[in-house]
Length: 101
Length: 101
DNA sequence: CGAATTTGTAAGCCTTGACTTACCAATAAT
DNA sequence: ATTATTGGTAAGTCAAGGCTTACAAATTCG
Image 1 (cartoon, each protein chain N blue to C red):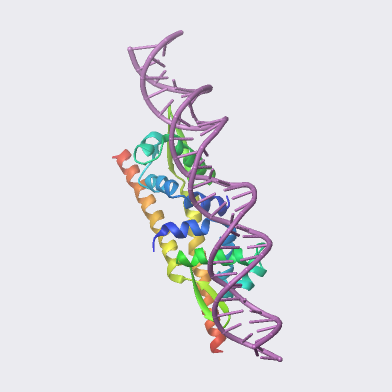
Image 2 (image 1 turned 90 degrees about the vertical axis):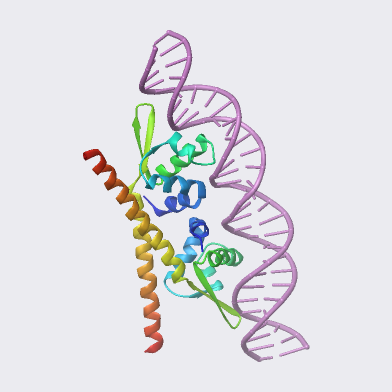
């Protein structure tokens, strides 16, 4: 799963709010929509984007659909920034050594 | 500096390409544009967004402007996902304990 | 000063996408 | 079977923004 779609998914405030809401635990579409200032279809559409991006999972329970944070997808994003941080600092250190030497 | 603008800034592929290019070291607008399939004004506009988001810094050197990764802004993003990861896992562990107990 | 270099900005085009309402499908309950 | 609950999908509207070309400002060099 590429980063591309994850960055795009998390860029929209409403969609990130859905994602952060799921951080506290699983929830149905209706429950999520009840806490947000947008319509239920809007939430449903956001969940589809998050799911396609690999950031949430869907589990059918009767007529309801329970959404949860996808830990694998979340870890990818955490790793991206951990690595970015390390590489940026390495490059910076190298530039200092070059100037000194 | 809020997360909002940083997520939005990194969501656009071209803009993230600019940011990742800067990870390897500072560069001028023209140098960045030379490596990307968009015009120089486009790169300039992306840099403005990245700067306003606190992800890059600008330093004037004569007629050139050197852009660099803003380590503070980058750390904010890294910390965001580190924290998110921890909190999501905590919530998950709690849910397991509740079910078991 | 006048020409060249480097970059930001303005105007305009055009696609993308977030949101709403309306509708349909699927499961559950009486 | 009929009704209620839950949620995905289609169609349409509207604003946001990425990109380009054209232009202007600032610095450097001869």
